[in-house]
Structures are given as structure tokens and as C-alpha cells.
Amino acid sequence: MLLATGFWLIRTKRREAHRRAMTAAFYTSVLFLLSYLAYHFQVGSVRFTGQGWIRTVYFAILISHTILAAVIVPLVLVTLARARGARFDAHKRLARITLPLWLYVSATGVVVYWMLYRL
Image 1 (cartoon, rainbow, N blue to C red):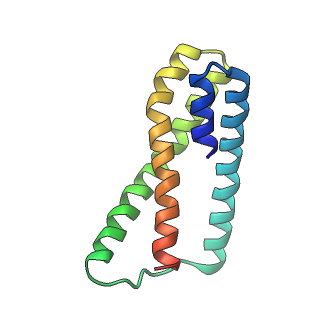
Image 2 (cartoon, rainbow, N blue to C red; image 1 turned 90 degrees about the horizontal axis):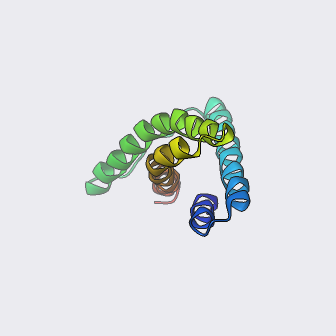
């Protein structure tokens, strides 16, 4: 929600509100990553028990999520650094790549969780 709000805010030229929303998105992501790592450090890995076609779907989503989750970290850091450095043209160019990938990683993380623990 913070990413979508930040996008809407910049499209409506509300730069300061955009900055706050994206900063909140960043810190929310950092807190999530820390809690995710702490949880898996204690619990270990959890096996997916689904069978048949759903197993293929799960692993396709998980693999794309995992790869892009690793890619998104430096993209977000560089995108934010460019904004903080007032390099807004460079920020905007990279943000056009970063935002959809960050949204995908966020959404597929929820899907992976749902499939693993709720399906």
C-alpha cells in the first residue's frame, strides 16, 4: 500500500508526501526482512506440502520471488540514494524499473506465504 500510495503521490506532484511514503515503504521492508530472517533463523526452512500442479505454480512463484528479492535490495538502495542526493532525473529513470519489481516482490511474498501456510 505504501508503494502504491507513493506512486500516486508523485504522479499528483506531492513530492514531500511521496518522500515520506517511500521512506515508510523502505523502513517497513527493512523491518519485514529482519523479522523474516529472525523467524527462519529460529524455525529453519518450511517445506511446501502441496502436490500436483499447485506445486509447480508455487515453485515458479517462489523462484521468481527469491531472485527478484535479491535484485531489489541494491535497486532500492540506489534509487533512494539518488533521490536523497537530489539526482531526480537519475532517480526517476531507475524508479521506473525499481517500483514494479518492488511491487512484484511484495505481492509474491504474500502469495508465497499464503500458499505455504494457508493452502
